[in-house]
Amino acid sequence: MDIEKLCSGINDWLINVRRDLHKTPELGLKEFKTKEKIKKYLDEIGISYIEYKNTTAIVAQINGDFEKTVGLRADIDALPIDEELDLDYKSQNPGIMHACGHDAHTAILLGACKVLYENRDLLKVNVKFFFQPGEEIGAGKYMIEEGCLENPKVDMIFGLHVGSHIKTGYIEIKKGTAAASTDRLILKVLGKNGHGAYPHEGVDAIVIASYLVTALQSIISRNIDPTDSAVISFGKIEGGHKGNIICDEVKLTGTLRTLNEDTHHLIKEKIKAMCENVSIGFGGKVDFEIIPGIPTLVNTSELVDLVVKNTSELLGCDKVLKKEKSPLGAEDFAWFLQKVPGVFFNIGCGNEDKNTTYPIHNSKFNIDEDCLLIGTMIHVKNILSIS
Image 1 (cartoon, one colour):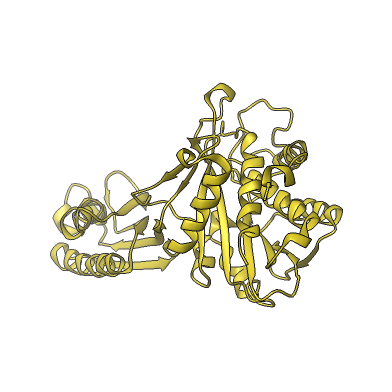
Image 2: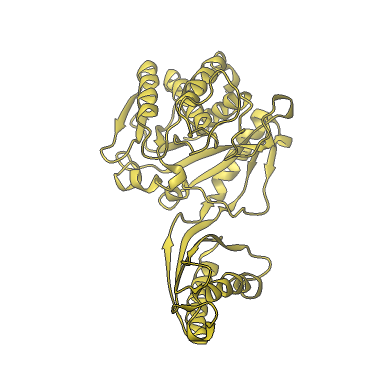
């Protein structure tokens, strides 16, 4: 089947849609204008869709009463970043920009909606298109809790993400674990006030907290298999009243990232033991809380093979980059993969000639818009190859 022919004539439309979305970025679960724009495009296409009460999610659907149902997902939220690029379609919302490419993901998914709906006579499966809010805050689980994967039940799902570290025209994909789980760490260190000149009369929470920040790193270096990966990072420390007063309370806030459940469990047990032992050794108290976040993202091997085959036929075998190592970044598409088989992959949007090599979450991030048609074609080919 000639996918390029099916998608011919859509490139300018994709670019216009993406730029329209780029101008009005909104933060997670507040994508009200974004939602209205998506609905407008879906109405123009003629495809039916469902809205949800508790989120800004939208699910469009082509239902041909087939046995299988396949999902495609895009995230729609933006980031609290001031855009530095001087573009005709620059963000009109101060302090908010599409610095992670979700405008591109949404445009690509709308492109797939358009092509597949206009060629629905070629379909052998039902298709559901998930426009997901709040990826940056891990909110994908909310639309799942509202039943978006049911009626009809989704059998498999595909998602993608643009990457400026990859040249336009290439994709990057990995079997198995492809993104880390993320937990929030909160440690409250309790000591005893005293005069800075007489530290022996108090219990210094700052000293205890400082020890913990460095000591906890030994869990990674001495308790985790060097061939495995995990991270404990603290990004926020709060405590103290005055320079000459022994601090009685410090709060540490950080993140724990792991790639498998065994390592995850081991690290949590080690953190607990270290906090208890440090409390005894220093004469203070350490209360800790580990708040579960996004789970590990695990790609289904058979569906990775399908994407590799389809993309190789579209772009060439040399354009498919197979990742060996798993990054410790998180991606809340993992919530979907907890429920159904699926695959998540990256498509290149990096082009030095177009100045699109700044990393995601950077105030100068931009995409090579040639990736929009490529992403759309991959989605379309994946859907049409399933029966």
